[in-house]
Image (cartoon, rainbow, N blue to C red; front, side, top):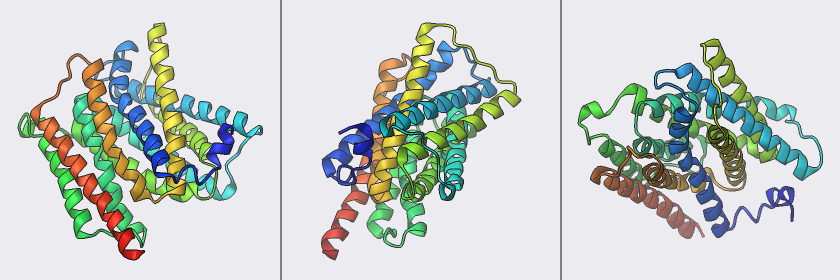
Length: 317
């Protein structure tokens, strides 16, 4: 079975074990982006306050990720692929929200907060999706148990920001990471609707290229410049592009064949992977008691949301 056959197999992406393994891989890749981006700033010699160059860096990364995805789609399908007319508007919207807008906030936020804290704050997208799904899908309404689960998760977010007092929260740091999480949540809902009308690899390729092009334009117009001075920097840049390509294709495929709430709950793994990898690869990062409690609260909230879904299925059957 080649790559194209797998991406066309609905039953493969509906099996619980496959869902867990694929979602875990996506969140591992996204988690690795937290220390990866931090290291990227250092290796590409981008200053902390050089936001245009950071946006340009993001645009080049996602534009290349789109090219990688397009090559995969063409090779696996043995034909050139295009977005359909009915999908081009949705693909453009995903690109502008889930690539451009999300990562403008993400790159700015990560410049002014730690990799550990940023990875935990980004997990609020899980709870944002649960709330937004209430207004979008008739069969995904908020219940008391869901509300308690969301409250626990947000308590974790508040807790992780109390370590240094109220001054531990800043709009440019934690605030931008939260806005990035909101953009991801909105993009996930749009992606589910668009993916139901087309092939995930094609949709991902073009949305990444559109979103990447927008970021490149913004970065250049604002005076951003980047160079890749070493092979080490090139290797990291290629890895960051590849992880986006792989993770977005697999995530879009999971969303296509499964309820958005069922997939979004796996986002709790992103801060776990992000925190651990940040501690391993960034020498100035470290765990604290607050971070451990925050992770525990986030996981407890997601378990409650997930159990609520299972309970409803048993009741309805």
